[in-house]
Image 1 (tube, rainbow, N blue to C red):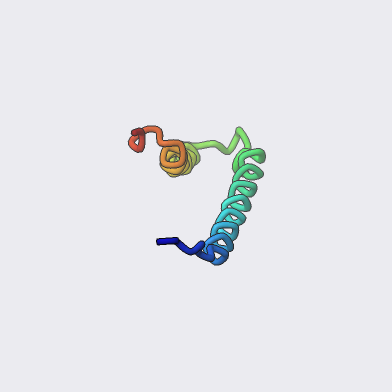
Image 2 (cartoon, rainbow, N blue to C red):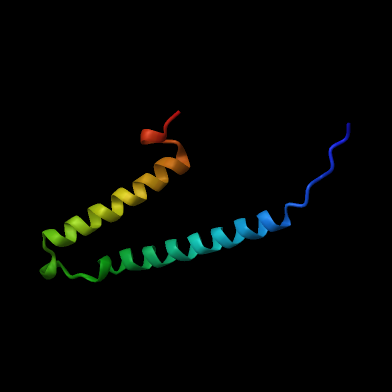
Length: 74
């Protein structure tokens, strides 16, 4: 029995669209980080620390999953 090659153009288009969206989000986050998350040293308080910890934790979930680290390690 011979298998036909399936047309994956729709999946490829969706993959490229998702990747483009991720790239745009990463670019925006990098710019915000370069601007110290729009804060100055004199303004920093524990709320800022909590917010950055929250961002870090969400990003760690993503990177752990992508690189099979942390709780996603095999």
